[in-house]
Image (cartoon, rainbow, N blue to C red; front, top):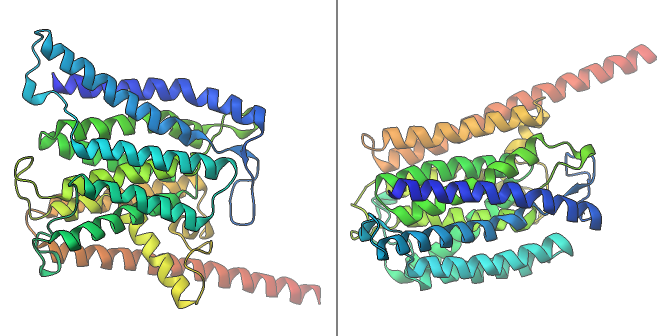
Length: 382
C-alpha cells in the first residue's frame, strides 16, 4: 500500500508541474521576465527563468495531500497499517520553514536581483533550522578515522554542508538539464535507498521532488525558445532543489538506530550521489584561490565548460556528465560492502582528478591546434 501512496505523490507532482509550467511561461513572456544572454552564458536568446517557482508548492502539496489521505484511510478503517503511513516529523516542519525562506529569496533574486551576501545569509538562516530540529551529522562512520561527533561539531558542520550543497546545485546550473538531471539522478538513488530502509516519508519526498523535475527537464532541454516553450529554473528552483537534496543526503547519513541500522558506508553513499557538483565547486574555488580571484567571481572553469570547450554540444556534455555522476554513485554503492570507506573516498578523489587532467589535456591540444592553424593562415596572407 505504501508504494501506491508514494507513486500517487510522484504522479501528483508530475501532473501539477505539467499544468503549472506552461502558465509560468505565459506570465514570463507577457511580463518580459527573461534571463538575458551575456559573455558567460551559452544561450543566445531571452529565455524565461521562473521555472523553479513551481517546485516548492508542488512538492509540499503532494506530500501534504498524500499524507492526509493515507492517515484518513487508516482512521476510516481502510487496510493501511499505521506504522507505514507517512508521518511528519520535526525535521520536515523545519524543512518546510527553510524552503519558504529560500523560496521567497529566490523569487526576489529572479525578479529584481539579490546581493550575493544577502543570499548567503538567507541560506545560513535556512540551513540552521535543520539542526534545531535534531537533524545533524552525528557520525563519520570511520571516515578520516572519525566516528561519533559531538553536537558542537556536528551542528555547524551540518549547516556548512547544507549551504555548500545548495550553492553547488546553483553553480552547476550552466547548461540545459544539468542541474535538474543531476538532481533527478540523486533523488532516484536516495529514494530507492530510503525505500530499502523503509523510511517511507523520506522516500515520498524524494519521488515527489523527482516528479516535479520531469516536466521541467522536458521544457528546459527540448523546449524551443523561438516558440516560447523553453524555461530555466532560476535561483528559486536551484535553491529549492539544493536545500531538499542536502536535507535528504544528511538524513540518510545520520545514524539513528530507531530509523535505520548502522551502516559503515552511509555517509559516503549518501554524499557520493552529489559528487559531481560538490567536487566541481571545490575544484573551481581552488582555481580561483590560486589565481587570487574573488571566490564569488563568475568564470568558465566548471566541468560543463570543459566539455563545451573540447567540442561537445550542450546535449552531449549533459549526457557525459550524467554518466559520470551515475558511475560514481553506482561504484560507491557496489563497492561499499567490500572496501574501506577511506579507500573509496580516496579513489573518488583520484578518479575525479584524473578525469579533469584528461579533459585539460584535450582542451590544451585543441587550443594549440587552433593557434597553429591561425599562424598558418597569417603566414599564407603574408
